[in-house]
Length: 481
Image 1 (cartoon, rainbow, N blue to C red):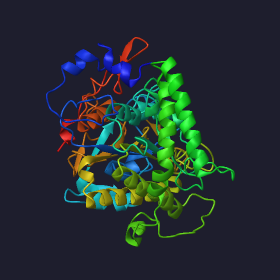
Image 2: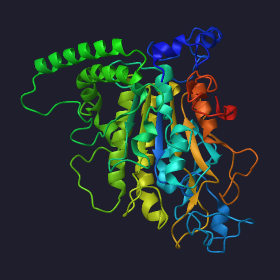
Image 3: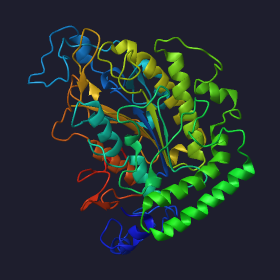
Image 4: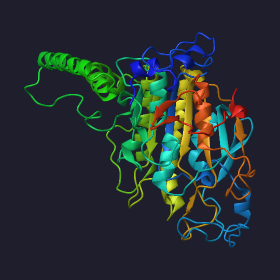
């Protein structure tokens, strides 16, 4: 395992001496604690916020309107080919339970449950021909989060953290805001560092909990500020001695860095998470104008609006304070009643509140970033592990559809107001099956906008030069501004 110092000194492994010598001649500088001392080309973006819908959000019920389903609703589904369903989701064609309407200058049709995003469609590029490799949640989530469909690989935020470093030494480079009910499939493995330096892993914050960051502040009454400082100083000295005896162990460097960062975060993180200085109109835009509200046991829109909106507002506060990558999750792991997007039983019951909560928070975030001049160099990326079938399951639900689904991006060098790569007339597969979009292409495009050539940010692990995009990936030039 390589740390930053040995990594930069070993030729032929990732960015070794020869690779560094042959970089492009631009002088765009990366942060000093990132492995990239010089970016490959001038970046359009500096930071990323990723919105991940756990459980597989239905493209055809949110962003990809299919009139054919309206016309043939209830008729036996005929795909014209053998279809491998995940469960028993090959019932009759099923139209969306939600009405669609046009928005923006180009008349992009959106579902009523994501109506708030209608104000933002002229800033968004929709990619409707995404394909996956599996209909299994855990593997598909890994693929979208890490570029591989098995454990043991770094999350995208870890690659960005490793390559670019931090813009604020008092806050983590990569922050994860999970669903308030718990983790999605794979849990922390989605944002782990794997074979990258351990310091590049995501830092988890639950902003709605009494203790948002575990173990940041001791609760014992005998702990004093002076004692805390003295203890940290002693730990720092002991760790540095230990590090000198064991050079090249990134775990120790990360542990030292974690103590240093924790000390800084004791002051900076509470301020970033404190929304008391936000004006009322901003809180209202994010759905946070119901202080002290209680919610029923059933999944409901006001609760989703508050919790997802809170994460979106905190994401904005983190981004403007120099956090490089923020990942926001909607939905936790499988269970009953449903608390995620895995709507096998009833799309309307599950997607309605989740989508309304997501759309209000995401729209507020986009507008807020734009008003503050941050959207122009911030990528907002919406994703999920796969889509859902145009045929019905059990009358009102939809089965898994890894054969086509939707992602969307905006800001940070993305051309807004466009739809790229249509799905077919049913929303079953890409219209052009020979030229789909894969997650590797999305990842390559995002790295490109950050000033990184995805083929050149590599780390040798188990004898292979590993990268986020594996051996795949093409920049989607059609969606760049």
